[in-house]
Structure formats: C-alpha cells, structure tokens
Image 1 (tube, rainbow, N blue to C red):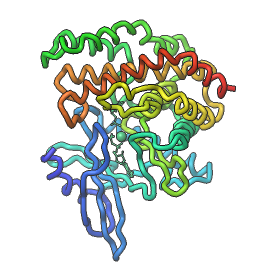
Image 2 (spheres, protein in one colour):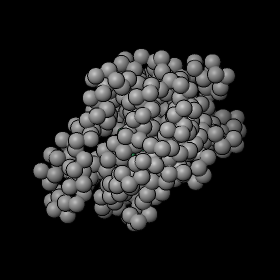
Image 3 (cartoon, protein in one colour):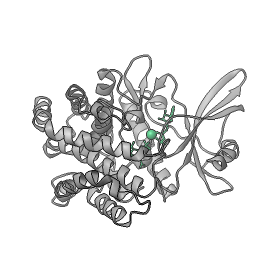
Image 4 (cartoon, protein in one colour):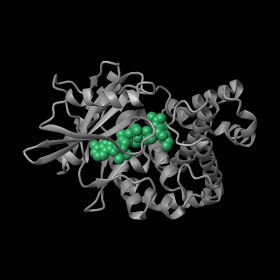
Length: 369
Ligand code: ADP
Ligand code: GN1
Ligand code: MG
C-alpha cells in the first residue's frame, strides 16, 4: 500500500488537470481499488477529482476494462442527454491524461485513472431510509433500460467467470481441499451449508444456453455503496464502480443489491442474530427496479429475480469463505477473521431467504404486473 501512495503524486501529475494540486488523500471504503480524493486549486476555486489505482491483480486486462468503461459511459452520456438529464453528474466521466489516454501506467507498473468528482452526492454503506433503497432499485433498473440496446457481447469479460456460480463453487472446493491456511476444520458447518446447495447453482447459465435468459450489459457489483444519492433531491444520481461491467444477467444485478441492501445487518456484522432479510426493503427495491427497467425485462428475467437474490448471496458467502481459507488474498480485511464474519452473514441471509421464499415471490407478483 505504501508503495502506491508514493506513486499517487506521479500519477496525479499525468492527468490533464487545471490548477495546482492541493491535496490527495485516501477516500471511500471499497474492497478492491485504492481510491484518493484529489483537490486542485485554480484562481481561488477548488476542483475535486477521484484518482484510483486499479487493482491489476484482480483485473488482469486493464486496457479491456478501460475500453468497457469508456464505451459504456459514452453511450450513457448520450442516453442521459436524450432523457434531458445531467451527463456530468449522472454517469462517471473519465479525465484524460495529458497524452489524451484514458489511464496512466506509473513507473512501477501500476494503473491509474481519474474521474470528475460527483459533487453534492453521497454513498451509503447501510440503508438509512427505505427511500434510498427504492431510489437505488430505480437507478439499477434504469441502468438496464438505458443500456438495453448496447451490444453486450462486445464488452470484455474483465474477470472471467465473475458470476459463474458453478465455477466459483469449484474454486471453493479446491480451497477447502488445499486448506493452505489450515482453517478448514473450523468451518465445517459453513462448508456443508454451501455444498448442500450445489444443485441450484447452474440454473441461470443453463437457461441462457437454452435461449431463455438474455445476456445483458450488467454491472455485477450493485451494492448500495456503488451508487451515489443526490444530497439535495434524495434521488439516486449516478452508478459508479464500473470495473465489473461485462456481459451478464440482470437478475444478478438485482440480486447483488438485495444481498447487500435488504440485509438488516452490515455485510461484516459478527452478531448473526442481527442478520435477516427485510421484506419491506426487499419490496421497495423490487418496486424501484421494475419501475426503472421500464418494461425492458423479459417475463423469465422477472420471475427469476428472487433466485438472483439467493444466488448472489450464496455465491458471495462462498467467495468470502474461499478467501478466508486461502489466507485473505483477495478482499481487503481490517481484522482477523473478517472474511469469515462476512461469509457467515451471507449464509445466514441465504437461510432467511429460504424461510421467506413464499413472501418474496408474493411481493414480486404484486409489482410484476
Ligand atoms: P472499489 O472498487 O474499491 O469499491 P469505487 O470505484 O467504488 O472503488 O470507489 C470507492 C469510493 O469512492 C466510492 O464508494 C465512493 O464513495 C467514492 N467515489 C468513487 N468515484 C467517485 C466519483 N466520481 N465522485 C465521488 N465519489 C466517488
Ligand atoms: C467487492 O469493489 P467492491 O468493494 O465494490 C467485490 C464484489 C463483492 C463485494 C462484497 C471486483 O466489491 O464482487 O460482492 O466486494 N468486487 C470484486 O462486498 O470482486
Ligand atoms: Mg465500490
């Protein structure tokens, strides 16, 4: 980490900024990239930018990733203009380097990019008001609508098999078998819980192969803190964290939001008695997502939304457990056992979804029209 911080000033200077750099400090609470808030001063007026070191251990094809982001944000700008929106705030906007490129590679090989800072908006780690979650559902639904005509197949798979749950399951089994950190014997209960659900993991891919589930431009990381809510209007303003945009399924975008936002506890809550699926939050998000998608989802996609929620939660629990067993090599952690706590909340949430399955389907029917 220290290394990257030293390189941040070299990186900042490579971008086409106006004015003097005043400060460049760590920012946000993402698990993957290193994010900095850069302040530049010009004639008494400060301008803010987001500088990010992309995690090239996680994202192996940075040129492909940046091409996805450039393509999708350019397309979104046009769509937002057609909708009479505000393209500088309703989508991410890349700041080019002085050489006119979309990213910069520093002298140690790290990759950096810069965005305009979205002013007057905030990201939340927990749903504070149901209205925020409704807004977030509407925005991710709208994202599906705005990108429905974008050629999804042209996008690079920035992390191959990212939401391929059967492949994630195989990786998990290997981690259990290898048991690099010698921790598997302490998590027998969690391993059993995951294995018992293996049969359910391949349904979306099977339906896609049969032509019954469309491939979409999907965001793939639709948690609440990847959306900015306007401080003035309270409306969802901009979807951020576009690294994982690739061909995928709308039901998983919906599902990942439910996994994170409709949980009554934080993703890393150690006290499992606090974890449950909030049906009121499930309801407001479902309503927002269906409204925002403006009729662009197929009946098959709509009927599979609860399945999407369960699979994203199970898959995420499996990924946290895999990382715990491998010695915390993927997700940033801030305490020992952090990934195990995260895994346990996800599995507890899956169990609660199973208990509330009929209620989830009932709510969906109410809004599906
Ligand atoms: P990660 O992949 O590590 O989660 P993100 O791209 O989500 O990284 O960025 C981390 C945090 O930085 C976000 O949660 C948000 O608070 C802030 N952020 C990112 N982009 C912007 C932006 N353009 N304007 C304002 N804040 C931003
Ligand atoms: C990571 O980057 P961030 O913090 O938004 C992860 C997601 C997980 C999430 C769990 C590229 O998201 O897939 O669902 O953590 N992103 C990547 O909180 O692996
Ligand atoms: Mg993020």
